[in-house]
Image (cartoon, rainbow over all chains, first blue to last red; front, side, top):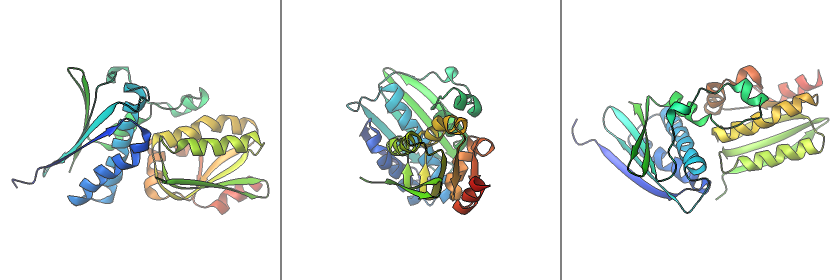
Length: 140
Length: 115
């Protein structure tokens, strides 16, 4: 079916104060295109984790910085892209979290990337000029 | 904007935290403060009743990870109860059920503390 492609964007300051707004932004789009509760829960979690990582790691909690979020879909896929201008994330430096070890070492964090990969079908990190982009795709 | 709340109750020697709303990187500090306060007051038998919890992100899970070792080494535990399926699924994705006591009801948790 042609003409079913829809894209929405939101630009927010990099602050955890906006987490609920960011989750609701992607959930509203997903509801509007008729996706089920399970998928809506998964994309709420994925965008939360990606946005939280940008706040903490790309921008070191500097709320003056901005994050741009795009959600789009066609008949086959839903994608969410977050763009920032902070420090880039090296996906090669990431390893799957060992929960027991993290508890013993009293380390928290590092679980967001794992959760994103669990609930989304594809995750890509791109560097474009000074911008970082994470693109997360869910097959429909 | 208020999308998370927490309250503390006492049932004999067990402290119960009722958490509701959305637990994320913004609201996790409220849970952290409540847990810290219980531990500082030497309450080590803790039940977290999640019946009102609509959502959890990894920042919320991180709070449970940060305190479980201390509480257990002091002879207590943090038991989690009454989760809805969506919330349980996030705990499950990270392997929590093998390391944490996650029970269907608060009553079960109270019984297991008293046994």
